[in-house]
Length: 306
Image (cartoon, rainbow, N blue to C red; front, side):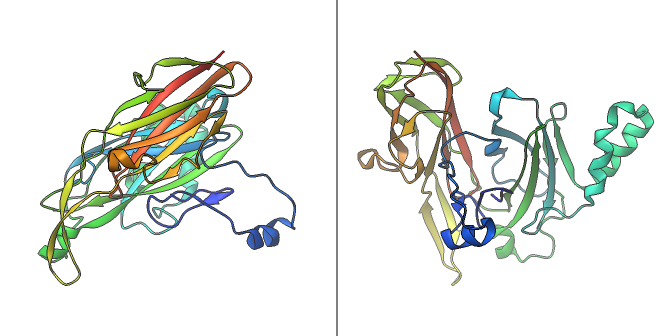
């Protein structure tokens, strides 16, 4: 993920990294700046994106869902572009094409159709709210590759621009496209417990102000897949999961990022301690799992602190 702001990441799905202290000093004039922890939801964030299927073939239709945090539930828009082999800066298109969206309501139906046709030709695959992101992988996406290279595949690029009246975030995601014998599937978070009590994703739970509770999220199973080494040897590997925890208030016991905290459960589960805020209020908690191959899943809860 690449984010324009106080955090960034290199290439794939690793957690955003803090700017080195010396670089902050150069950029910000040695001012003392308190940056939020990565798990703190204090700004506009795109936390996860999920493609179905997670590893499509050429010609496959793909649909997308996303996990977005918008402070104060403010109105927001999300513009999605998709392309094959986009660069580090995302898909190549003329940003001026987006200007037509600002005055869309004042255009005639014919002019609106012309704007959308230009955007779709440039790679527009979604415009939220209103147009859910969906993409058909180009049929020639793997043309010119050898059979072995097609099994390994290429990375398509998803470029998502989130915008509110107060903030903008540009996010780059990679989507594998291949003819793999064992294409990737998304991991599913099947449970999240609070002090051992089961929850229902999307529901609201109640926690006492200042209380510390134990959280545990889990998936049902790990996925095996075939991998061809640079020496041409085919191996069977088991995916390794990583977890991300996010909350809008209180304190997480760990940093909320990385491998599972509960070693007894292996890679199937992740444990975190969470201390609720001292003041009553409403909060949101998310557990996100990544399989290291582009697949994602999550479990979300609304939390009432009283």
